[in-house]
Image 1 (spheres, rainbow, N blue to C red):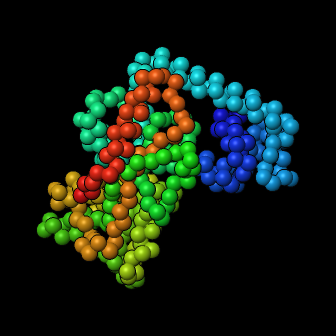
Image 2: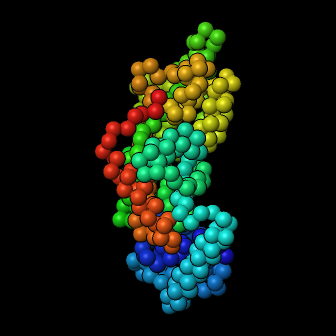
Image 3: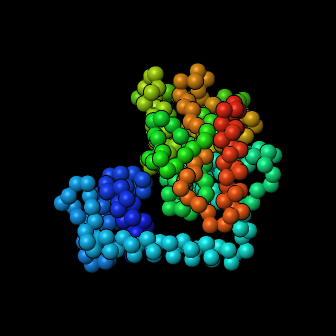
Length: 315
């Protein structure tokens, strides 16, 4: 039995909707249904009455619901106890941040915040976007930093999760440079000679952003996918080595552009896309430690107050 099965079951008991709970738990509905079925197989009885709408618990499910809540509470309390014994200061804010933002945006953003509210103790978990959001949903972190774009919105319930815009990020194509500073590769390529393309994996958030960008290109772009990874830094390294064109966040490419090692290929601005950078929190989550709760509240109030201030776009 996995702890996430219990969290799925509790979510379903609250929403009474497989589709809604699947969205809140950041999994597909078929995958969510399989996890509920796996829990029922482990328990040895049906917990969900699937003949009714909206979905409701069976009598056994009602009994097990109370037990599931107890088990989850005890598990979270045990985790908090073990963390406190590791020597981590109590007033430590836990962040989940996608890899690219962890390397480029987060350090300077934190410095800006600390200049206003003082030194903070932080723990950062660098994850992919999906897992970072899942950490927030499952109560593993206090705050999540992530990208937002209307074409790929977060499936987070606004009644429970709130966000603050803290910056912006552009994604655009880049190529390694010849000795004279000209790009090794160019766009749009041609049907007979497509441009070597360094791609994100299909499930990567930046990969979905790139697909949106390409779908809105004013003219056909001819690409030959020669490499695939889910990390922008991996694509940047391959682009620098001359393997092809990569669509990168400007903050990730900035140092290489400044040194002349990478060349932007979007001089007209037709092949770029701008995303917001947002900070997310669970409004209903209450850290057990009073000092940590106060620290998270202070930070949130500061960034919320600064929301209306103009943010410099990474270059």
